[in-house]
Each structure stands twice: as C-alpha cells, then as structure tokens.
Length: 418
Image (tube, rainbow, N blue to C red; front, side, top):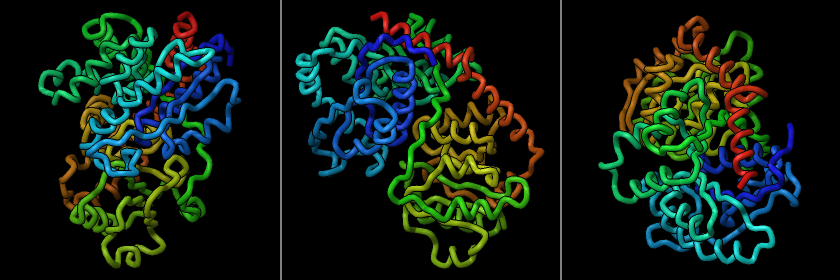
C-alpha cells in the first residue's frame, strides 16, 4: 500500500466500549498503513485492547497517551468500560472522560510534534470538538454505524432527544469531518443527504467494512469451539451461532425461551451467554449437539467457520458487518440504540436478513423461534443468496479502486494537507 500520509500526527480518542474501541483500532491500522503517525488516548484498564495494534506497528509511528479514568458519581469505582454497565451509562462515560480535556491540552502543548487533527468517537462529540477548537485543530467524528442510522437520528430525532444525547449528535454534525464504518453501495443515498442537508460540506468518508486486525488470543477464549465446529462440518453449514454482543443482558424468561427454541429446533448451535442464567439441565439435554460458551468467545473465528450457516444477532452494526463478511444468514433481533435502524436496513431495504423478534424485553415464542432457527440453515433462501452478493460488494469496496479504499485514500490526503 502506498504511503502518502507524510507522517502527519493524529490523536485518536476512543469511546470505552468494545463495540467502539475495536472498529476505531481497525481504522487506526488503515491510517498507519497509509503513512500517518497516531497517538491513541486510553485509560489503564482499556489499554489491553490495543495490544494487537501495538504489536503490528513501530513505536515511532504509534504511541499511546494513557490517562487515569476520571471519577464520576454515577460510575461504579474501578469501572472503565461500558461492558460492565448498561446502556444508560453512555452519557456518564462521556461526561467523565470530558474531564481529561486539561491533561490532553497539557500533553499537546508540551509535545514536540503535536497532532494536526483529532479523530474522536461519536459518543464523545459532546466535548471533543470544543477540545479541538481550543487546540486550533479539526475534530473528525468517527461514526461506528452507518449513514442510514445517523441520518434518521439527525433528520427525525434531534429535537426530541434528551439534552445529553442532543449535544453529542450536534457535536458530530458540527465536526470538521465524518468517517463512517460503512460503504457507498448501501449508504450512498444517505451520505448524500447528510452532506447536502445536514453538514453542508463534502468531508464525509464511508470507509467500511473496516476489516478486523488479527486480535490474537484473549483471556477466557474457549479452546474447544473450533475443534467442535470442525467436527460438525459434514454437511453444508449445519450450525446456528447465537450471540448478543457485549452490552446486552438478557432476562431469565428470554434465556429460557432461547434455550427451549434451541432444544426444540434440533439444530447444532454455539450459544454465547454473558450471564450464568442458562436454564438448569439445558446443557445436558443438548450435549453433543450444542455448545454454550460463558463469557468471551472468538466470534470472528466462529462465524467465519464453514460449519456456521446462520447467526441470531442483536444487530449491532459491528456484529451485523461481521456476519455479512462471513457470508452467514443474519437472524435479526434488534434490541436498543441503532439496532432497529440496522435491522430495517438489512431486512426491509437490502433483504439480506430475517427479522425474528424485536425489543430489549421481548420474550420470543419458543416454538416459532425453533422453526426459524431450523429453516435458517436452508441453502436456497433468497435472503442467503442476496447476503452472498452483498458480501462480495462489501469486499470489492475495500479492494484497490473500490469506493471505501478510495475514500480512505482521500481522507488521509485531506489530513496530510492540514
């Protein structure tokens, strides 16, 4: 890959949640490959996320700025990542991290080669554009979702949002530039709308799918799952993967319904659970036919395995993208945040997913869900055929000459001109 970033220095400020840190890390990797110099701000307990990236790049081009996590009356002591709390804490984390403005300014003013721009997560844009303005440099808002979701919020919902959310969305809109983890072929109409009607300039880049860098082993990895999947691969894609991300905590009734559906469906499955509320006796009933993984699981390796045919997902954008790139059929159960808008895009507009349920507290009908799980493994489903085409389109966009490849090149060129 050509290097034309001229070593221009950029400060990346991630939001402390796995679904935000990981795509920002993948974006950072692409910027480094194109010749930029990067500093990533992190708090001590989130630093380990960046180890794979730090091992890939020289310390002359990639540094970390480690600052202590500021105390906040609403955030439990010692908690530095959203995976330890629920979604209601989003504004509290942004408010806590805003207290790092002065330490960042001090670091900037004493740096021999200070950054020419900030790239900050959208959930921090209640304060990062003001920080950038104080430093006399531009802020680029990194939007971890797609323009369909963002345009819906910015056109329809701004006036009805609570003030803390309205402030961060306005910060996004008022930033010097916007980067989306999406691609033109599914988002062009909405990115055009945002440029023409909302931000009134062209500094918007759809650079996805941001391919995950090799993460390496993480503590808690379940070593048995890949050999087990290898043993399942006797017929075409016979396994359903069930996983709802790092943020969703399911109720006892929801767990029971999913367990009953998996049992009734007779499908082979891998089910990743955050809680230890798996119904008693369930694992014995499905022994040999299904695996339950408690805690962290190597999701990319699982859904990329040739034995996996479908994926029951909450429709977080990262997870949905991973499913699309793995060529599996998405079974959508949107629950919160952008999930509903992502499901509408994937199910209603693109026709590459099947909606099975929706709502954070909804308890699905186990018999219906069992039938859906069983039916989802058929190879001739129209959604599966369309999903395969979408996978190819997505991968073509990041090849040299593709829409996202060119957008990344242009983004780096604009930064290098600052």
